[in-house]
Image (cartoon, rainbow, N blue to C red):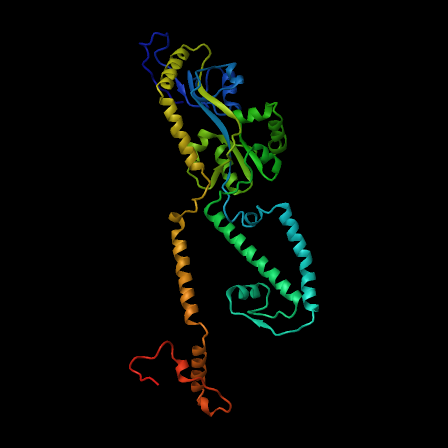
Length: 409
């Protein structure tokens, strides 16, 4: 047991010259006090302390020990494994679908065979249309028609147009949604509070064995707490455990663990695989525990009052709350030019290269004639030797105006 000496003999209140200070979980007062403080009575160290730090104020403990003025406020937090993009590959694409959208998907799925059958039974007529554009080629690939769109009737034109519009809308919607998911949106938590956790029914809940949290859920008259204890904790192996084992099970799968804000902040907040739910699972106050009628109580209360009135405790609470918020943040960086500027540069470079390539590959009368002449020369036959061959004038094979050193006709 940790022992500390304090020289407080000059204080006006009567007190012993030396007293014992015990951390949470050590014995205080009588054996009954130890059972009330620890819950299960398994973490005593055989001694008796005059002061225990970091106790949650509970009515059951107040029967056997005295509390100082509340030092700070704390609350229970539900810790779960931080979801990743791999865990929500499918739900990311379907979470924005409304019931009307799902109805439209069902209607389209039912009518798709009818539309294809109607297109097959239509009589053919008219020439096949050929296009080198990017969007028609993309539409042809989406409908498994290659780069040629054989539109032979009015109904087929309607079908291809509907497929083209639908494909473009789907591509634009999911492309923008994918960018927003990777750059703007928050990680999608499976639930936000204890009520939603109980409603899902897929997760197991863990509580620190022998702690005040177990006592609260076990004897609470609140309907939600009673339902959580009955459906998620009582009789389930692994529900009553300790922090290291509970956190290890959280990282394994669908398991949620309840711990205080201080415990998570000082022990597990630097683990990027863990995240806490935004809603609190109960608010409590922490104070120092003393023996009944201890002469130290007025001294400690006076010192705590001085620290709070001077603002030292407030600064400490603000600093700790900011650190906890920074470790529990789940949102991704915003979609700004500073974060994704390189992507715009790459896209602009690719667009410029595409324009240059298209311009150089453009089909004009001069380029067509040049390809015809070069192709026949490579094959070993003169263009004039072919019967019925028509060769374009030489002037058409040149690009731009004639050079100045050539004579004029």
